[in-house]
Amino acid sequence: MVILTGNTLTLNEVYQVLHLGEMVTVPDDVWKKVEASRAMVEDIVDQGKVVYGITTGFGKFSDVLIEKKDVEDLQLNLIRSHACGVGEPFPEIVSRAILLLRANALLKGVSGIRRETIEQLLLLLNQHIHPVVPQQGSLGASGDLAPLSHVALALIGEGEVFYQGERTSTGHAFQLAGIQPISLKAKEGLALINGTQAMTAMGVVSFIEAEQLAIQSDIIASLTIEGLQGIMDAFDELIHTSRGYPEQIEVAARIRELLQDSKLTSQQGELRVQDAYSLRCIPQVHGASWQVLGYVKEKLEIEINAATDNPLVFDTEKKVISGGNFHGQPIAFAMDFLGIGMAELANISERRVERLVNPQLNDLPPFLSPEPGLQSGAMIMQYCAAALVSENKTLAHPASVDSIPSSANQEDHVSMGTIGSRHAYQIIQNCRRVLAIELICALEAVQYRGIEKMSTKTRRVFDKAREIVPAITKDRVFSKDIEALTLWLKFEGQKIVEKYNQKQGV
Image 1 (cartoon, rainbow, N blue to C red):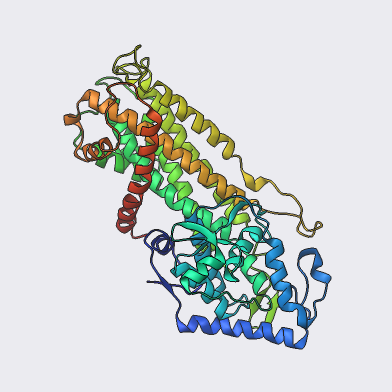
Image 2 (cartoon, rainbow, N blue to C red; image 1 turned 180 degrees about the vertical axis):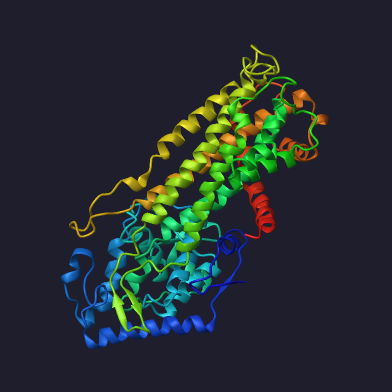
């Protein structure tokens, strides 16, 4: 059971809720803060005070006063009019993450929302009823208005949801689950949609997958080192401690551990004096991507416990203050950085693929073909990897440097953080396929060298991967192999990262 307080949620707990189906609960003292904040909002409505979003319109309409009898219609109109998302929906796991993160933010007790409304979010989360949220349409500055509006629609029984493996109307899912829709009261619509939870949820899901891939890239690179009889001197601890980056030191140590009893590696001067950078610089390049992950993790763990709506209601100080915590710039930068870091893991992986298949760069069969000339072997797999890394270079263009004014220039600078998070996720999917291609090629190379000479640990990886992709004895439709191994890496990666997190105490 994961306990939500609005302040203490960790990425490891998010992982448990998203991937392990852990239930969530809220302590009584947290509800007291929520109720105190709500009492202030009701007092504002009763007294007819002029407060943005409670008794006024929104955005450029902030100077339009709303009569007491219309405050609930104001919130309903807000949700319906702002549900302008388009395109394919976010993956269901992202929708689940949005429910979790939005509930946690509202539990901070500074949003003026009712307990009943937060409980509706938690009910959907615990019963695995996930809103259908279109991916496109958020500027990432007035909060993720369009995506979060589609989430809010589900609370009131409108829109669509994923339930029991199907996409259906919210009303139908509620009927099956025995759930009643709620009605939104003063400020609640604004509190639900004024936040960064779409970009942050996409970011959290992306980070979890990126961490898995970073570990797998070290493992797969180790098989490639064996396939190319790589020089182990480049991974000597003295080299890496002399530079001082902890992540670089850790990658080198991991490579040494994976290959400690291998008979396929070499020493400098034995076969050649130095390896190419794509082998020799694995700790430096992979380590730098691990540094990116550290930065992203730090920002995400702040944001998943942040109050990001507007205005904020501070019961103790008796203040309702309009500000800009909904602006997604911190996450926009983090997501752009994440995409760049993962694109580089794919870039160096593709270069290792080239060294595995190019007969001018190794002594292996050309393109790892069983009958060079008659059969092409892995030739076009390298083409595919090259296309994927090229696509990543386009996706890695930072979304955060763009801004388009909105709401009649009232909202004149926006983050585009949701676009950045979506691009980072796409890069990660491409990166996994590139690593799958490298693994297929590495499997062939070590089999040619002699699998009995592999290290104990890489041999275990070889045996498991061979259950998914058999040896290349003749040309076949390799697309199926790439996709099958990509899927295996995704689900095997979840197990690997669980072990890694336990070891690291994350």
